[in-house]
Length: 498
Image (cartoon, rainbow, N blue to C red; front, side, top):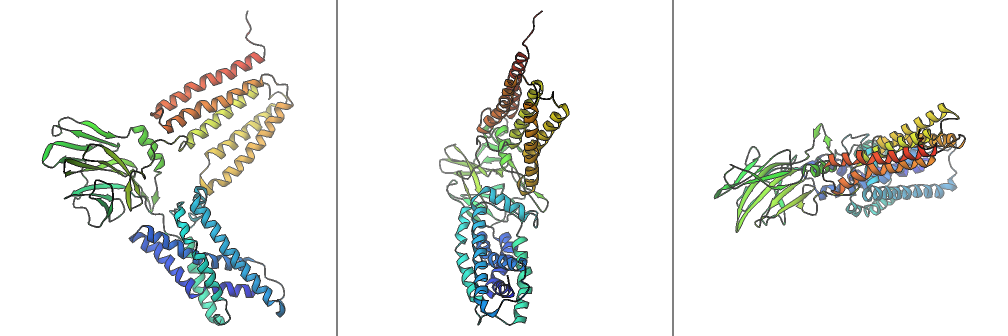
C-alpha cells in the first residue's frame, strides 16, 4: 500500500459520518443498552458497527502493508486509487462475511465472544439471524467512503491528522471494548395488582405484566410494592386455599386447609432441574453470579371463575396456573416477553452431556490400550508401546476436557497432534509385534456405548434420575469389559482345565 491509500483510508475513518457512527456505538453500548435493553439498542449497535468496521479494517491493512522503497510515478495514480478501492471493497466484504457467520452460527458466536473477552472479560455474543438486517448499512459505508475520498472533500493535512488522532483510538475502543454482555434475565419477584400479574426481572428496574392470563405481556415501569418476595400466598376471599414455593426446588405446593397440610401442585423433577441448570450456565459480569432455575416467589390473583397463580422461577421464567387449574411454563425472551415457546427444553437427546461423553471416550481408549497390551502389542518395545499409549491418552484428554471456545483451541490442536502421534506408535507396535486376540478390541466401542447411551437417555428423559444413568453406565460397562477379556483369553489358548 502507498501513502495515497493510507490517506484515503484515514479520510474514510475520519469522515463526519464515520465519526458519528463511532459516537453512536460508544454511547449505545456503554449507556443506552443498560438503560433500555432491547431490540432497538441491540440493532443500533449493529448498524453503527457496519459503518465503523470497514474503514478501520481498511486503515489497518494499509498500515500493516509494507511501504514501497520509492514513490510510485505520477502515471500510476489511477492504479493506486484502484488499489485503495479494492482494499475498501475487501474490508466491506470481510465485515459482512464475518458478521453473517457470527450471527448465524453458534461456532461463530462463541469464537467472537472469546475474542472480545480478551478486551472485555464479560463480553457476550449471541447468534441472532435477525441482526442481519444491519447488513444494508455496508452500502452506506461504501457511499461514505466515496464521498470521503473525493478531492474536493479531502481536508488539509493538519485537519486529516487531527481527525485521525480522534477517530482511530475511539474506533478501536468502540469495537474492542464492547459493552459487557447483559445479565441474563431472571424472574425473581411476582405481584398481583387488581387484574394484573407483574413479574419483576433481576438486574432490571422494570417488569413484565399481563392482564389476559399470560397470553400477552407488556412492560411495567412501577417498582415493586413489597420489599421482599412472598414464598406463600393465599387466594383472596378464600383463605383456606394457599400456595407456596420451596426454593431451591422448581416446585409449587398447594394447601386446602389454610396450611395445615400441603400437596404438590406443580413441579419439575430435581433431575430435570439439574438438566435445566446445565442450559442456564452461571454467567458472571462484574463479579455478579446470575440466578439459576428455582422457584423463588408466588402470587395469587382472583379472577372470574377461579384464580391465577404466578410463580417466579429464576432463569426458567414463570410457572402460571390459569383459572382452569392448568399450569403453563413460560420462558423469558430477553427482558421483553414471556411465552411457552421460549421455555428451555426439558429433554434434548445428546445435548449438554459433554463431560460424560468425554469420559466415555477416555474410558474406551483405556480399554483399547489394555486390549492391545493383552494381545501382545507391547512385546517388541514395551517402552515404546507405553509411551505411545500415554501420548494418545493425554492427547485425547486435552481434546475432550480442554477449555471451551478459542482459549481451548491450542489444547485441541496439541491434543489432536498427540493423539495422531500416539496412534501411529500404537499401530506400529501392533504391526511389528506378535499379537493374538485382536478381536478383544471390540470391548472399546462397546464400553463407549455403555457409558454414552445412559447419559444420552438421561438428556432425553429416560432415565429421569441422573444417579440411575450413572448406575446404568457402570453396570453396562461390566459385560463389555468381560467380553473383551473373554475374547483375549480364548485367543491365547482358552480356559485350561486340569
